[in-house]
Image 1 (cartoon, helix red, strand yellow):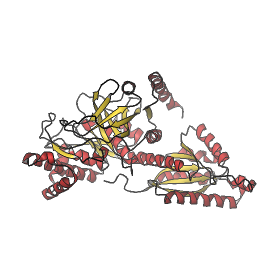
Image 2 (cartoon, helix red, strand yellow):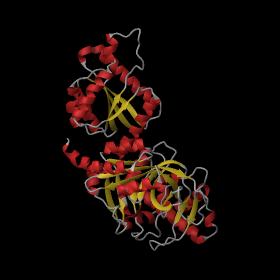
Image 3 (tube, rainbow, N blue to C red):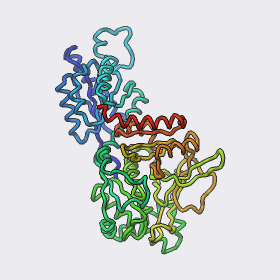
Image 4 (cartoon, rainbow, N blue to C red):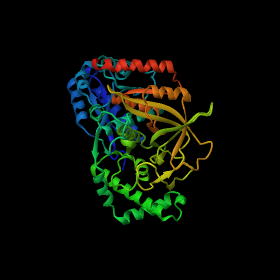
Length: 504
């Protein structure tokens, strides 16, 4: 499954006015097209930047915004006031705008031509003037556009554009995404509950339910030759030493592959972009999907264990935002601690379902079959590996009742100081920032649960952009977190998000 099968577009809209004559308007048009073309030739962006002409009247601007709103291939618009554009011309359009928007404060020329500068140059290169006019109107209308400042040829500016474009792709993906749940939440668990209707209203994605009997029909329809052929790919791709010559274990692997192929066929048939399951609801399935879930996550599907549809949706968004990144992302659970004084670590894992995209690159995943005390089914196959070292994030999407909240915590993943030969699951080991006690206390204060999306492919800047697009509260836990300030932030956030509903 491709994470983003069709390359979407971001429309670049340049502002100007007729006061300075047709020649200046033509120059603005040429400059806008040149910027778009040069950005596209970089092959750095996950979208095509499309110059949409010069907007110089209220009617022209409104028409372009209406087109952007209705064009399914357009994921966002970028506003740039190349020269001065009276902001009252933008009011009607901004009132109707529904697509994500960015205000790009750039300038066509990088440097002042000190010896030749004249008023013609000044009239054309008025971004410093026009963008402030547009910025005032945006603030007055409470339109919280993303703002990027920097010359269009600067690498840092281009990286900021790339980050925001990826966030818009994830936001667009949510608005066409449907996630399926097989079974319900693990009974008695609170944090995996939530308001699915409000999520659809606020966040765009839909959550539906299907019976395991429907899924099992797809599993049983997989030709035997297909999953037997896949066994050969498994032998080439993974370390199968643990299976040895044990016929029972190889049978378990075969059953797992049949579940994977049937599940993928089901998801493709319904165009679902992620799924949840629960070991308490397995129906006719012969085993809890382990290997199947791991390999489907690696293909870009969202997943949440024990019915956790919020983690499923969030993982899908992170997978979209990490397109083109060699680092990985996975469903994860804070499982247990290493509490040696001054060397505290968190061991993240799950019973089976950790995505191989996060593994250390100098190792090979091991296919193993072990008993599972939960679920009452046959022993499931899974991939076992160590997570890669390096900077990482843990992210959670939680339902606070009155709103949704994102919690993002910075981590430093580390190599295990010792082997764990008896742990039959994939895992990652990390140090929370700024330190164990502060980070864990802040996470618990914010209401963060045990399920997360763990990623080394997406940074806080992308999560910040995504939260702004989605209108979701973002709580950050990083190297600068101080608990007293953090607690005040949570209290102020409660007040802000309550009152902001009236600030429209």
